[in-house]
Amino acid sequence: MQNVEKQRYGRAQKASKQRQLSQFVLPLLEQVSQQQQHQALIGLNFGRLLSPSSLQNIAQSGHTLKQYDPFFAADNQLLSSQYDFVCCYRVFEHFRSPNKEWRLLSNLVKPEGWLAINTPLLADLAQFSKWHYKNNPTHVSFYQQATFEFLASISDFELIFASKDLILMQKASESDIKRSLI
Image 1: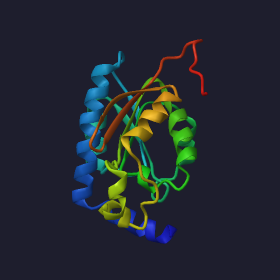
Image 2 (image 1 turned 60 degrees about the vertical axis):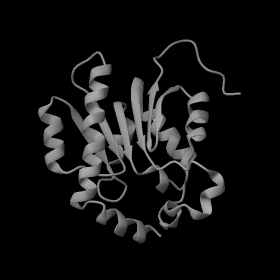
Image 3 (image 1 turned 90 degrees about the vertical axis):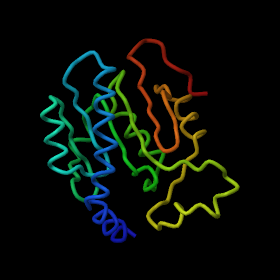
């Protein structure tokens, strides 16, 4: 299965897929930059790689975007830092251990930082058998809006916006007050 995933991921580096990823990351960076107090942001693009030209545009705007991809840029040192924002474009559906991945991603985001997720949401569970997205053999985890509402309710994140395929979550600031994980 890992070879199938790597082949499919390799195809995701094509120009049309790069354009979609860039159209996700660049506006996100602008929006997060407006929300944050400090000017230069350091982010992590988790699970896919942006093109060098997109990275150059980000650097020219004064921000830094590091990239982690399990197949093409598996720098595990990046997973021991925290970031102002972490973006995941069409990667959640590939998680074989979503709870483990959620914990990792949660730890990568600084207090008051952002987690931006783009993944198709299943709107109607009764329609799962007809949902085309499940037919991709590398798509092994599926989500509904309620999934992210639940994750926000038991974590240090506030669900800021959820529409069609976009989920924005902001991590709470550090404080002595903690939510109960009942």
